Length: 539
Image 1 (cartoon, helix red, strand yellow):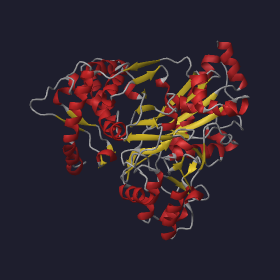
Image 2 (cartoon, one colour):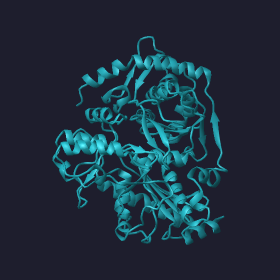
Image 3 (cartoon, one colour):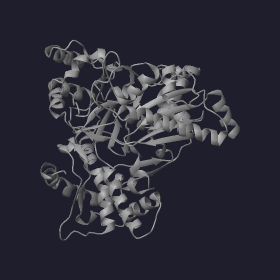
Image 4 (cartoon, one colour):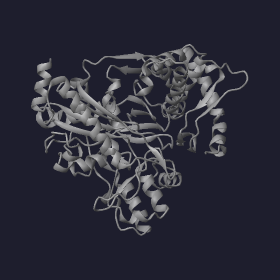
């Protein structure tokens, strides 16, 4: 086995995936059988500057160099080899947001991430004009917001992209984007695998009426689908990996994708009627549709798989942040009394404690809103815990409440798909931090969404593995005799997931009844959360 891996490394039959997540940048190297043979990670965090959630772009390159150097070190430690040849590279990142540059590549405005909800007016006007739901976090909503505010930089825009598109551009010189990520910038037409031409024309009329000289299609990245080649590593790109890298110029890249597309790929959820739920800093469900929805809903985004199939996406800005904060708090108490416990052990103990709680969490209620939540109409967030004198305030109920709270807003959006649109969902694949403890988050999600939830053995690999798979697929389509004719769906089914097992869990009737009671309390209590947002005074 080791000889085979060494041969893959030596001959460049490996594939590198790098994903820029909300709290972690991760790189993974996979072999010719799609197994991870080395990885590296770098923690980072967004911050609020001038009321804007943002990252400094210099931190992108610090993180890239750190996570890749750790991967190199692991390869050398395990195999005594240095990575220089790679079959293909893929870049992924959190979707949406606002990154704009002038014609010379100068950044024109601070990076506005998906967490920002200042674009309500712009998103609403575009939704009405385009007859298509434009969420507040989409790039086009941020652009129109800047135009409405007459921000000086708008006249100088030469290029607008996502974080994945930005990193790919700097490494390859190519201004391109995978269709899944592009669909979160501006609506796409599934029959053309490109931006919707009628909507482009409508927005260009807005641009013209406001006196700008550029056209929208001239500043957007070109759209590509999975399997297409999207450029090669340049000399300048090699330098961005750091002085210790031995990577060679000319390594091919697959189209850069968003975390939604890599999540679908990593869970084999790119076929129609399949879906996946990613539960990390944010939580979103992706369902590949058999047919279009009957109308536009503000709670549901229409995006695409990496091959362009229509996907209904329910996205919520908040998920695991509050759970993680409370567990850090409990760990402080443990350390205060002179005891230590491994982080993973604490998660396992507290998650499993949630299964001992009353099915309705004993009347406890919380909101995990660190940032605004458009589905419930909140522009800003305020984490909140509420109980009354008769609530059963136990640790089990408290943990169950926290975990139920990660799913509540998602439930509001998913009900539109399942109850109003009768969307077929045969199975949901779960991945992300909510599933880090075996069986707990999976069980509660099945009850909340009233659908079977499967967690695969590979679920912990995440989006970095997903984009590495897309890089491997791109290489396959260009090197194998049947490559040009094998769809991504077939490639994943036959080449990747054939031996990967998963555990499927069906809804538990008592859990489902308890979650329904919790949701009734949750919806009635939104007025309390809204009051907290409006009246709580921040220091």
